[in-house]
Length: 394
Image 1 (spheres, one colour):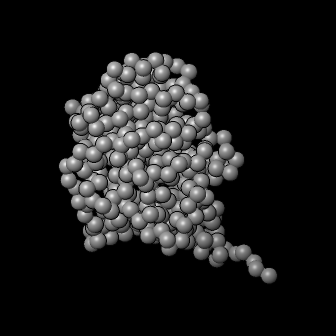
Image 2 (cartoon, helix red, strand yellow):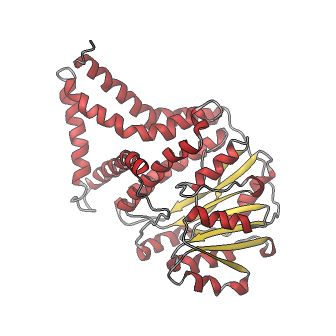
């Protein structure tokens, strides 16, 4: 009969700790070394291909006019661009605003409320361009962004080219720390793209060859992962083109938590659609297991470390329990520490990390029991954030 004792608990603590270190530091170091030794260049060339822009919207009146002006300002031959605004049962002024741009060649497609996947499927069916360009309503696009993405398709191995999302600066450390996480994530994606391929795209700015597009399942949470993976498993690369940029507003940490729950629940859903991700058919298998699945398992490893800390030998036990207690106390204290205090630079990092880990923990029940909206809404402080985002454009 197996008896669980302090030695087993100590072993679990060590294994969980090693996993945390590998996911947070070991794997980034591995991909940095791999990218340096085995970088795959991308052939780029200026070329003017026909493009269909797909802009799915539901109740986007707050952002739509600015977005359409951004699309019309793209530095790309206008006669080669088809712009489709797919209004998914909007009940505000979305349809009215889009209709005002009919004279500029922008097409409005109204459909019954069915979710983003249904809107995109409708748009893909109506698209005529060689390249599909996917974007969302809130983000402002750099004028050269579309041209930079299309240049990547001169390389016959590229099936999807994703742009870079730039988050505007903010006056609060809460916004700044969430932005630090996003920059860390972009660094990972850049290295994976250099090695071979990412396993998803930035949903507000990416392009793909139209002949490679497939219909999206109803209720899919991550269309910007489902479509690129369909291309990836046909042998093409999904690459990051960092010179193609979209600019967004900084978000509240609470909104970032909800976005991460949705995204990570979407990873579980993606495994149901693409079980080959767990097999050697996935040529990026090691990085998928380390980056995507590793992130999902990270909060569980932290829980194991917390529980098994009490079974460590004397001395080690006090250090492990005490250091974890200090970390979680810092995270909790961040709610009350004033912005101007130097301590805030420590507590805000701890709180941001803890919020993201909690989101990963909540992704499991969210996926199993549903309750996630088919349209994701991110709340921002538009006026303050707008000035920050504008500074990135100047």
